[in-house]
Length: 282
Image (cartoon, rainbow, N blue to C red):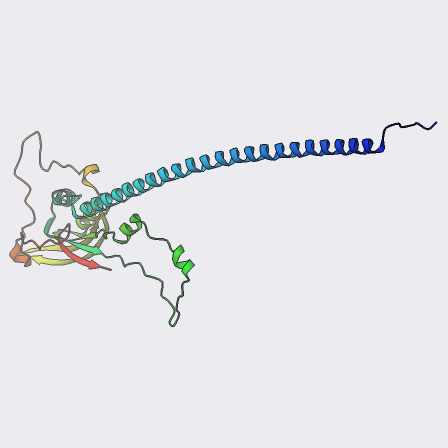
């Protein structure tokens, strides 16, 4: 059954248009509120990000200052260690009195030493070789490459100016006389047992006459152990000729005088290194 509408058509159309405008305005307000809320939330997040960035920048600045301080301390430590190494290289870690005591205490009683020579051989390390550029090759750096070139730090500059620590090899030459080769062999075995010496070699042992006696003249070459240190070394202790606390007449060495061998005792060679004369060894 058809329904009858007694309202005017103009009123109905105006009412529908009013309803549409109301709905559209409500939707517009909702959208604007959502946009404003999103803007406020985003702005708050950006503020938080900026504050975090500032905090991180401050932390990085503090860390950079601490790293710079640490690098300076490392550079000072390296300089102190280099100075200590230079000083240690120039100081005798094994006094000559201990060397002579070991040479004498490990010598068989009927043996005599005529000369003991010490001379330092400086080991010169070659400088590091730089990479050679090929002939005719040119290097062109762009502005970006020049900007990205790293400036050397203070520690790297200190390494470039580092002082070379001198290293020495102390060589020894011993010349003496013994009754037989057995005594020379015993002496070589005693020197080998001593931790102060290394590279012990018998250069020669030949028969020679001194007055009315036939003796063996020998020469021994050896080196001082570079790791030897008198602080942790226990020298060989002997009581020569002591019986019952009585000191008898000392044992007389072989009847050899300096005039017989042509060797002058008591002469000293000018000392340039830590032990005796200095030579340079590549």
